[in-house]
Image (tube, rainbow, N blue to C red; front, side):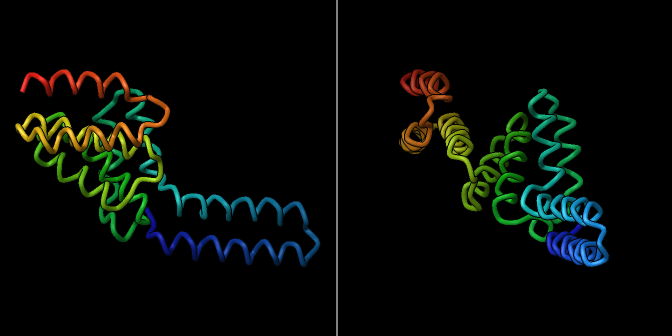
Length: 171
């Protein structure tokens, strides 16, 4: 895995090579090489290991997702700010199966770095609400649930929110 800045340097070098191909008259080679440099720019904004971890998570393969995330050794140097948020979000999902205290730290870190999609932010806040509820912090759980409900504009998490509200009444 490359550092985030090395990816941009490689993309710039490949783009310069494409310009030389255009100057030499090899138009199709130049277009193909520009597309090749675009791949490195894409991987600057969307980390390849995080994408593969999301694919494994979609198939409910938590061990495989953890394996792909383990390839990211130093997230602060390898990822941009939003991707570091998603790295912590995925780590929180994986750790929430075993250690909710550590999962809470990961979800809070993910929210501090920022997540680009509102439903991901709502999911993180809903997870934090569930953790707060399990630790008997009712006020924090209700505020987090209300924030998650506001962020969930498409009602994708409506059933989970309703279920958590029913459990919150039992506390």
